[in-house]
Image 1 (cartoon, rainbow, N blue to C red):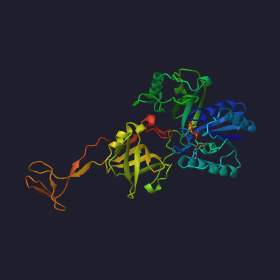
Image 2: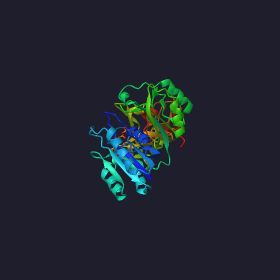
Image 3: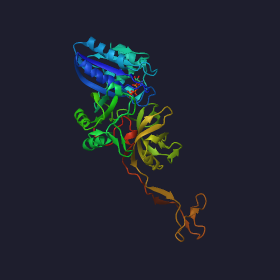
Image 4: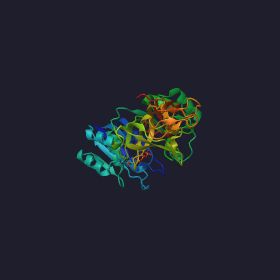
Length: 413
Ligand code: ATP
């Protein structure tokens, strides 16, 4: 019998923990009662307020004859490690035996793009006779069910190393030079190891959680090999490799007009820059985008997107662009990527006087232009070539600001 197990919402921003750690412990414990055939680390809607950090859930598929024993082991691990004392931690476990219903896959897609209720997950689980366990509010059943339903046609892999328990909450001492060497050898088969613009190691979190470091890449073998090149600075107490939807852009949906942009979704939208980009206090850059129906929406490149803001600032009205990003409550698109499709290369200016070379001024509405000094005249404005510091290509935020789900431009999946 193939038993699908989904788990979510076990960690706490303050006290640490990580659902993937419980998954790794379980992989080891469940090996005693069966064979773990698949381990998925599934990122869900990055725009929801309930998330602790990266909105991750996990799902395991275990081939076992001891289904009840496997369930018991799972519940015990969640109860042992979940941070139940944090008021925002509301764990959920979902068990499903055998073939996965199509409904589960549809639920995964909804959990990527929308905000779904606990009751909606519960209704679906009951309809399909799946067993589930809710701790406190049990919000975790949303992510747990979605993770089980994720079919991951496009996938990447992550190797995660975990720390010995006594090290949790202490400083990590990963050798940065070894990370650079690993990156030099394995990039772009692995990705987001280091941000060269910021000079920052990206494989290790700064949270009190059990994760020591994680390496992302295009297959299980490459991430495991890459991990061996890292000098971790301490014992690796446990490790696991997950199949994941990270770096796949699974959250983005192309919409054809502004009217289709829903709060809390993630969209791809094409249009024309309709206003000069504006920098506000805090270093955020905003501009208006007009779709082909004349409707407008605000796009934002926030301060943490660093040098990407320079790209956005260099846009001018009339540029044709494709924007990629998450949508907030007020329907502002928080840019993750921007593709410049067509740069405006010209602008209309008042003609120059042939005599003195000065710019002419308007002679009045519909009366053309004149040079006051030389009394020369001209009928129309003239085109002037614009020098642009942008190229017609895809620009992305730097790795340090990249969302887990965002596909790095170097990644060929
Ligand atoms: P970490 O990345 O550290 O594991 P997290 O960011 O994954 O933390 P969770 O603790 O998993 O945060 O909290 C997310 C909560 O939101 C879970 O209870 C999950 O079930 C729920 N959730 C996930 N996706 C959706 C969605 N689309 N709509 C509503 N709730 C969701």
